[in-house]
Image 1: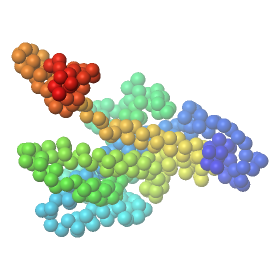
Image 2: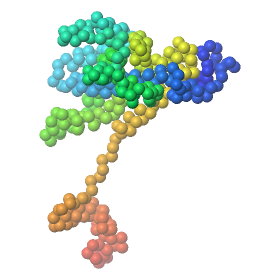
Image 3: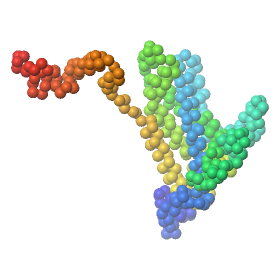
Image 4: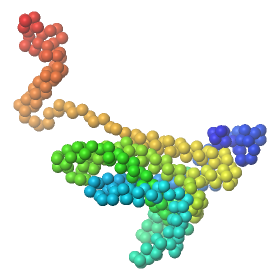
Length: 363
């Protein structure tokens, strides 16, 4: 049904299969992806906003969750259960309640700006500030206007200067909220994975003289690869589908700098009665998530370790090289796989061993 709606001009009245509903093919998709109207520009803006949201939230929440898991999993830490509960508590709290709390904390006279004032920093009106973070940084160096080459419409109809704006101040507040509310859940996944790692592995690394960082980077982290893929995949899906925080907090404002594809799909269908366009946006968003998940799976795949070859170092002494090759051939004979064409036990296929005698002569 959703596929049919995305290729029709249904307005939400009556049945989508009624006689008054016309099949328009890919017009809804082309209007979003290749059109020059408001729908295409809004979709490009939503993709840009969500791109920076994903780019910041997924790595930061994963890194924070892993850090908390490693800290809480330490045997020497007292009150580990209390810390686990405290870190996990925001994850079980309603996202609507957290969003309302965030609106108070990040208001112009909120707690966050009060804390910043102690350091002589004048905080912004977070959820009403459409300025991009990167544009603010550019202005510090005197770059306040777009260069000539970045003013024309670019990818998805968005000028290059707007792509370089980064997340808005309002979207940055949502980024902090997402990291705060989701890190606890992923922390539990990492804790479960850490507890499945045998202590003997860590002890062996310590005996070999590995430092704490080397043990984490070369022993612990590779063994967390399956869990890491799960956390990154869940984070990727969740961040591309962000909706409820935007709906409760800003509804895409200010100046559409918090507009996301999920909210745009809802707004097109339920508020503007363009259900075909809303369904098309949902399908495009689904395709983006699938493609990025496959690419992520490919990047985190298990790589085969190349087999060690019998290579003699360049410039080695001829006697040393001959001895190395002889030792390798002897090892192959012992294992029953002489590389010189002989069979098991050092005999050739016709029954003659390497000394020229046959099995019958030896008997």
